[in-house]
Amino acid sequence: QVQLVESGGGLVQAGGSLRLSCAASGLTFSSYTMAWFRQAPGKEREFVARIRWSITYYADSVKGRFTISRDDAKNTVYLQMNSLKPEGTAVYYCAAQYYSSTSYDAWGQGTQVTVSS
Image 1 (cartoon, one colour):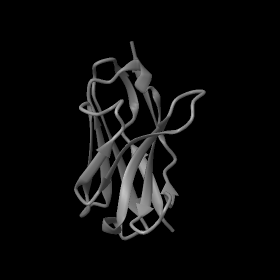
Image 2 (cartoon, helix red, strand yellow; image 1 turned 60 degrees about the vertical axis):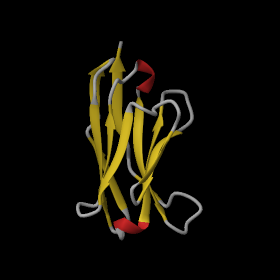
Image 3 (cartoon, rainbow, N blue to C red; image 1 turned 120 degrees about the vertical axis):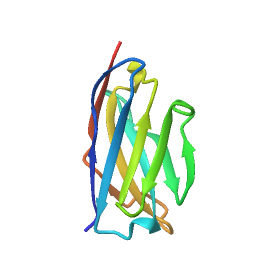
């Protein structure tokens, strides 16, 4: 079955950077749109960024600060987060969507990112 495993979360000061990774298995990685979502305490899960082939799309709140990328040879998607803000504190989730699917087919367990002010 499809498995997504996130890593790279941690504690960082405001203005700092983190790079998240999501390793995928059990799927033909290149056939999937990969995305990052996040869920802050007491809030709903929200979209952060997605990538299909080399086409990227970002939430307005992270545009210009975050970069999503993928390495199809390693079945891995990344999220480079720069200029982090305290409101970026959340659990970050990786998700995979088959190219013809209308919803995300698999989710990771999440990785905690805490941004201190």
